[in-house]
Image (cartoon, rainbow, N blue to C red):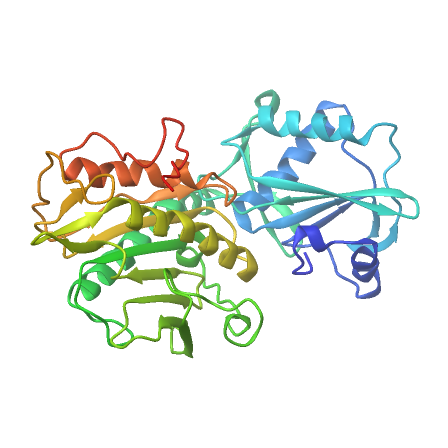
Length: 386
């Protein structure tokens, strides 16, 4: 729209669309009123929404007059019950598109009533098809607005998501190989490592580059995992935050593409009675507490879901799981040098962290002979042992 977060859209921002002559196109569409109740109105609304999901994140602005694509007046929406209308729109979207799209709604109070802004996110599980009343069509958007996708565009859309996931996995594999060889952006200890990647799918499906300088210069400064004493450095990839102890035990690399790489060699393994063990509480708690910080960084950067969350453990051969602090119990040592856990595709950055991480933690416990992590309850809630 105007590169504003949805929460930041105000009456003044809407007025600026008019004064700046922001024309309808690939990422914005103006509507005087809400969709009507006829089948034709519903199909038009579904086509508009799906065209954003299939092309680029964009906004439907209801309560704005336009003339040949240029906004002319903030008219507001005339309805007795806007909440009821929002539920009606949500019902239309749920029943009329396959697969479902991701969107958010903001109601803005204006002099003439209220404006409804619906932001539809670019989808990577599509393409999204209008299925209402047997319509069965796919739509995209360009500078002139929405249009039906042709055969070649459909072929591209169907392969794009898979291609992005393949590129994410290739990137992750390259990084794990480099880190296993201790090829790090700064001198780093050669101890067992936790590696956490947060990779927005859009980073590998487009040429998006983000402004990373606020994470170096501004109040939203990057912080590595597990330390309160760190330094920052700009590098070719973006911004690097690293622990001050040299060689470093922890760093976080924020890439200009939005990818976040977190490496920590302090919290995973500890020596205990002649053994090197995984301190399950320390390592899981560090990751559990840090992942929300990564999601906050992504939101501040302007990245949107879906995001691939990937956890890997390096230099793990012979490690045993320490249960309840340092109680080894009857587990088994890990028999592989590296554990590369499957990526989890997070569709919403507000997803409970336990729901994302517990299945990954469980797999590490499986590698040590235990059925599941003992640091979570059955609902995926962290068990505070303090």
